[in-house]
Length: 278
Length: 278
Picture 1 (cartoon, rainbow over the protein chains, first blue to last red):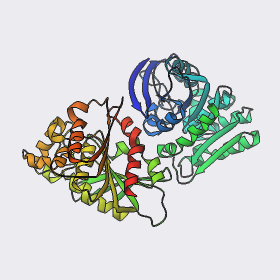
Picture 2 (cartoon, chains in turn orange, yellow; picture 1 turned 45 degrees about the horizontal axis):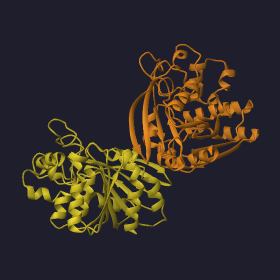
Picture 3 (cartoon, helix red, strand yellow; picture 1 turned 90 degrees about the vertical axis):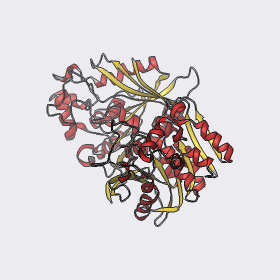
Picture 4 (cartoon, rainbow over the protein chains, first blue to last red; picture 1 turned 60 degrees about the horizontal axis):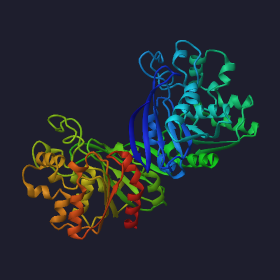
């Protein structure tokens, strides 16, 4: 693991690292904020999964999470959104919503994507082991959140691993990728036509199929241009109501899909996670 | 004035605008954050002057000022750091420390810079009038701050206009440009060899020559790579001690010159301004 930068911030350290990933077969870059802490302490960790076209850098620069992570004693990790580099296949037209920057937090089964697009394994297994080896985290206290495609990732990984993630939230998530254009394109490309497989990577379908967490916090801007076609939070509301999941879904008036939206509600999400991570 | 973007953030609005400037003879871009406020209210305003190579965008994206401006009811304005565009002369070698992105908040007197490099007039006269006409600000309550070259700008404009700026602070400022390479290059290029003229744009010289403000807040990272050659806060400490100016100079351990440093102490500066702006 190579440290690309290490900066003092809000009393802690904002670190950016690169490492060779066995999951993706590529080099991967991630960022970690470590708040001020007592020597020897092991801290709860919140994973932030980013959206289409992003890298670790977007939330690291614009997410405004460090002050409250320092206050609450949370480690904050931001992975990349896909494998990258020579030999990694991309969308044939170079579109932003598939391929590079658009890994959808699943393990592809279709050629040519199966070789490198293994973001689920990377985020669930490889990166936590690396983080635990290199940083003062307590893996018994993990929360997960994310934005847009990363909100999809947070919800699906959280619902699939309720014993691991004690807190799950999302900002403007794609709640039902099987039912919307972004998700249908990605799932067809990475997973093929097997709709049963799609359901294992779709938050609403997972809930319909029995996945449960105690509670979810979701913020969504009502001026988000992707609200009605791609995000459709009402589908999550219906699924949670049916399933008895305590969903707090807040429609935030006037907010769009940008990091101005994410950063405005970052404090609330991190406090929500900290309450549940003890 | 053209609105380039308008985004809901922290309950207020982050706006980016472009306008034709009479001062610089170019189009200029700036950002304004307007916090939530009662209809008809006129709010205190804090000017943030950015450093070498920056535009309005650096602090707008990385400054982490919106949450506390919303809490305190402060308007926050971030101008560009120089004129830009076709016909605007740059450093002959394209260096980052002169010309484009390096206006030093003064009005040039030397050709070919005299025609467009009029950032002092722009920041002191033209932009406040425009802001007051278009946004709900109270120009009787202005504070000024900035980073690096922009810290130099905040100190010199603040010291030169103590009746206008009721609060003056700076992050890692160039306190004595006449005595350091960045400032000597810029002043020679924009102002020529008249050292008496240089002193009117040098915070330490201004204080030596009688300029006074009641108090200054300055933060400086002790791991800043420019600390000993370009920034030299001890010169400001000595000048303030001689002059009886209540300088709060905080050397922040481990911090560098980046926006990780600026954002870490933004809250403190804005609270300090709000106290003085009523």
